[in-house]
Amino acid sequence: MRTLSMTILLAAVLSGCSGKTPNPPVDTPQTPGEPQTPEEPLPSGPPVTQGPPNVPEFEPAFPGQTRVPAIQTKTAFQVTEIASGFRNPWAIAFLPDQRMLVTEKPTGSLYIVTPQGVKSPAVAGLPRVDGRNQGGLLDVEVGPDYAQSGLIYWTYYEPRSGGNGLAVARAKLVEGEQPRVESVQVIFRMMPTLESTLHAGGRLVFTPDGKLFVTLGERSILEGRVQARDVKSHFGKVVRINPDGSVPDDNPYVNTEGAKPEIWSVGHRNILSAALDRQNRLWTVEMGPRGGDELNRPEAGKDYGWPTIGYGEEYSGAPIHESTQGPGMEQPVYYWDPVISPSGMTIYTGELFPEWRDNVFIGGLSSQALVRLMMRNDRVVGEERLLTDLGVRVREVVQGPEGALYLLTDATNGKLLKLTPR
Ligand SMILES: [Ca+2]
Image 1 (spheres, rainbow, N blue to C red):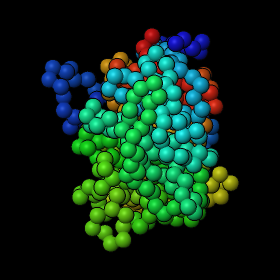
Image 2 (cartoon, helix red, strand yellow):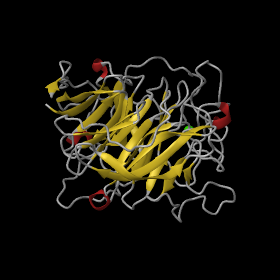
Image 3 (cartoon, helix red, strand yellow):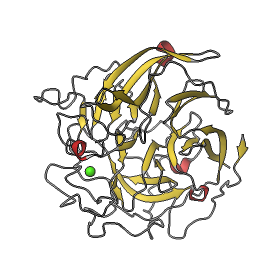
Image 4 (cartoon, rainbow, N blue to C red):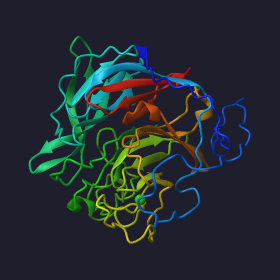
C-alpha cells in the first residue's frame, strides 16, 4: 500500500459556500441520544467549474434542477492505493470479513482482494461474457444471506443466439487456493435479445426487505431506444425481483396485460449508478445523451420519460426531444449539462466523514471526478467535484464497512483506491 503522490489536502473554505451536513429528512428515525443537526443555511454562489451547456435552450423545470452552488469538503483527506493491475474494473462488493469482490469488465474475471490489496487468482466457474465495448462482467453483490448460503450475485452481457443481453446470475462462492463458484443459476434475463454492445445498464441493489433491484439500459440503437417506455420490453427499465428470480406480488405491472412483470419503473436511458438512501429508497443516475445525465428517485410504476422528454441532444447535435416536460412523465431531481458520465453511486452513512452524512457520491468517467451532492428535502443544494487533479475515470464508489470510500478507476491498469480522513 502506498499513499498517492497526488494526495489531496483540502482544508480551504470556499467563501460563500457551506460544506456542512444537511438536516436529515424529518421522517428519518433519530437514534436515541443522537444530537439534532442545527439547520444550516443553504450553499450559495456559483456552480462548479464546468463547460458551457450543450443545450442552452432547455431550461430547468424548477430552481436547483441543475448547476447548484459549488461546495467544498472541509475535512482533510487522503487517497491510498490498495491495489492496481485490474483491467477496466467495474464493481466492488464487501464480504463480511472486509475483503472485497472486484469485477473486471472486459475479461469477465472476478477477484477476491484483501484489505491490504492482496488479490486472489480469478474466481473459476463464471459463465462466459460478451466483453466487447461496454459489455462484459459488470456489477457484483454479496447475497443478504451470504453467511448461511455463500451466494453472490452478478450482472454480465450474456452472449446469445442472435445477439446478447444483460443477465443476472448467482452462485455459491467456494474459497481455497483456487476460488470458484458452484451451482451457477441465471435468475434474470433482459429481453428481447438484441445485437448491441452498448447500454445494458447493470447495477444491482438489494433492499432490506429481501428484494433485488436491477437497472437496465435501452441498448443505444434506435430499435432498443423506442422500447424504453414500453412495458412489454425490459429495455430502459428498473426491474425488481426476488433473489431466486421470481416476481414480487406487489410489483406495479403484475396485473397489466402483456407487461413484463419484473418492471418497477420505465423511461430510462442507461442506468449505471444506483444506491439506497437511509430510508431505503432507490436513487439512480443515468447516462444521458449529450447534456442530459439525470439523477432520479425511481418509484413504482412511474415513467421517467426517455426518449420522449429530457435535457440533452444527440452527440451529432441533432435534437432528440421536442420538450423537457410531458404529461405523465417525471422530472429528474437533477441533471448535468455538460454531462459527468456517471458510473457507481453511494449515499454516505459512515462515521469517518460527519460532514458527508447523507451526501450522494457518483463516479464520473468523462468528468474524471468523484461527484458529491449535498441534499436537502430530496433536492440537490450543493455540488462538488472531488479528485479532479488525479486525472482518472472513476468507475465505482462504495462505502466500506469502516466508513471509508473505496473507488475503482476505469483504465487498462485500473486501481482500487481508498479515501480516508487525513
Ligand atoms: Ca428522464
